[in-house]
Length: 589
Image 1 (cartoon, rainbow, N blue to C red):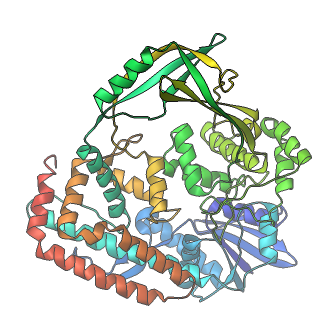
Image 2: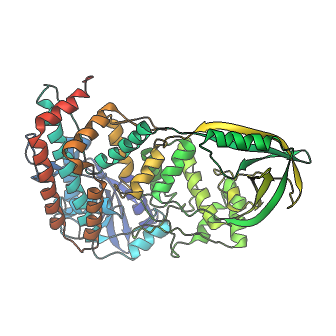
């Protein structure tokens, strides 16, 4: 018997169904449901890992720090002790009877950690064959099975293990140290959490809040003119822009107000390409879903993962904006042409030729997010919104650039120049597919150099400079990616943790709470290293080196422990001061 290990039950069913050509048998051993099929005269069973069946935990039951004595334990808390024991026992029985084992979990660091832990702790084996696929479709599964990798990708395995150890070391030790500093003064079980990625992320919001608090607005004036030709009115703005001296603004305004006509001194007409978008990576999908539907990043990821398990889209946890030639784009578009909403444009793309625009970002494990071509059935409203967004983005990236006619005009009023601009689209291009983006159209009347233009009105407008805007969830996610804080798959979870810990509030306009501020100020004073994005980025880069097999996991972990010990010593030395500062912000507790 050959055992195939998938990550989730839905994936296990699909893999068995495709490889068994629909002839599968559902079996049960204890509380483990698995799928049996025959292929080429061999018996296969396909089982699910149910996600992470093992998690890191401290061997020491006492709440002490520093604590680096950790071990992988079955995830009893998440699944229930008895249920999980029976599940693991059933997996063990199947594993013992297996001649060969194939790991078919998601092909990324987390998928490899899940597979590797079950392989060593349950199946008692050091290695296995590996399936690599980016979509749960018959073609991908068959292709992956026919081209099995002879081994796990141990670069991904060790990088994934390193991430778990680093997150545990930093999260558990810092949380214990900070929480115990407060518990010196109160009897309640108070939890103050900090982490390798969450603390620098919180610091981003804190610094933005400080910029807003410290911002001193400046008064300025702008001068606008309303022009008219043949009954059509249009607006022009003084070319000098903002004027910060009141006397100067009044002087220009009074001089221009005396004039009844302006003179067109320059007309520039430019034909511009507006490039079609590139396919989605996870971060850009989360950003757009937040922008258009108000979905949180974690909600978007959950929906995208469900669509992936339904076989409707490719693997969503990707940082790629490229679709390789091995993926049959024409076949996907032909399939999409069977869906009424996409029929007309899909046929047009096929007729006129596919012209895929690739982005710059690459992910060695998976391509950009794209539809598989399978026809969706009975999708919920929210799933349909995300599916439609992905399909339209994919089709738009395969279509034509838009062509915009941009007109820029300079009009002289007295001795001052006013700018006016207008645009319209000669060819709508990709805009007609990706209807979430509305092209700006502002048509000017026909103007010629040297002609006089009637001035309807001159306006003097008083305003003041604005502080930087607060982050929303989409922008903060984008900023985390730019600064290499976390990974494509973990960033949304970090935001959820910060909200759960009551360090952040507000969804459309993110604010740091008093507790969040107190934590940042305390860390800033006593252990600023915890807030350093450079330190976090350094460890991210070292995990990439582990993945490339340029650095060992032991080397990176020892370096992390050494740095963390220094930080924890500082906290211990200032424990009472830290506790008092944090407690002062927790009056409600």
